[in-house]
Image 1 (cartoon, rainbow over the protein chains, first blue to last red):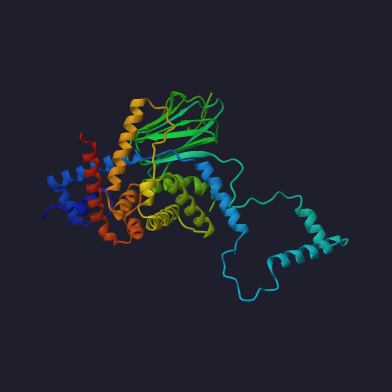
Image 2: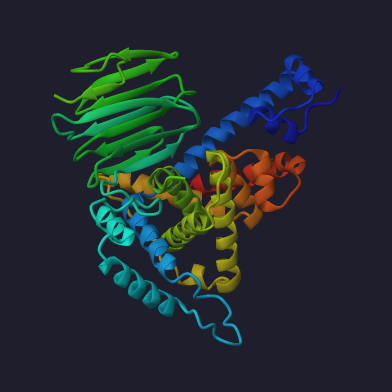
Amino acid sequence: MSHLTERTILELRDGVPVDADASAHLDECAVCRTALEEAEARSVDIASALTDLDEGFDVASAREAVAARLAGRATTAGGGRQPSARAPFWTLGRAATFLLLTTGALSALPGSPVRDFISSRSLDPPAPSALMPAPIKPVGMRMSVQDGPVIVELDQVPPGTSIEVLLVPGSSVAVRAAPGSSFSSAQGRVQATIVGGPVTVEFPNAIDEVSLTVNGRTYLSRKDGNLLFGFAPEQDPEGTRFIVP
Amino acid sequence: MDFNTTFDEEYLPLVRYCHQLSDDRDTAEDVAQEAMVRLFERGVEGSSAGVRAWLFKTATHLIRDRYRVEGNRMRLLRENPVMTTDPETPDAALERTENRARARRALDAMPARDREMLLMRYSGFSYREIADTVDVAATSVGTLLARAERRFTSVLAAAGEPA
């Protein structure tokens, strides 16, 4: 068999299924193994170079802007439609006026079910809309990582702040905290200045070597898949939530 | 689909991809936000990976449309100062600026399709998802990606050599 093509080398590197002959060839061909190692090294170089392009983006402001746009479009839905040749009698305004007048008149009647309905509904809090952001909006940063070590450093974390550590599928590390916190990243490293919690740190489960440092102290690390707890002031029974002293 | 959760999980990787692709911070933020608006307006449902693929594909098309309309004008007019909020030393800041410029030059030297493929690959997408976005056969992705990587690394290496 001749040497593997560059395409097959990349497919092997990137986990794309290849035929058994290619895998077998790789086992016995030093040239192709070297090519695969070079492709893996190139992948690391490219990932590193692309990380250099990263800038900090304000997720909270963007979320508010998108929520506002969605809310704005929802109230003007239909504005982009083609007008019909003849305007219908039941325009939105007329329908609203009719409903208001009818409801008002019905609610004025003693024992009216409309009256009961309105009085019971008025005490309920407004239902949260799926499109509107919740009042408390954490901010955060997510960064793709190819391999370890992955380091998260949290600084100026106020006492009493809750920090939850999660091992999640995928290939990215993420940190979320209260608005006002700031984040920066470099290769394999996320640094954050935390103004408040709760803080969530997500490490990719596939990465064997990770560490979490809080206010200069290592709280947790993972080597060869084993979790190690360093300075852990207070933690829940599962050891994934800390309270900063 | 919960707005906050989806937004927080998808926006940052999306806006970074848009920034790498467009080399323009404003464009990146506009396009990423427009893609998010369309996602929620259209009620796109699916797995997390499916939603992410939809967002990246939408953003890729939006950026292509912008470049088609504006041509090179944006590139000629663009000022792209390196912004950083990190408390870096002058040396570290300089090194970061140089690294960024090298990576930018390497991306700019690539044809648009190669650039899209490379950036999607390094955003974690599968060959099939890349193929779907750039409209090539899935079986061609390995070959095209190999060429894109070669081109990127050769320009990157050349840019790092002393003049």
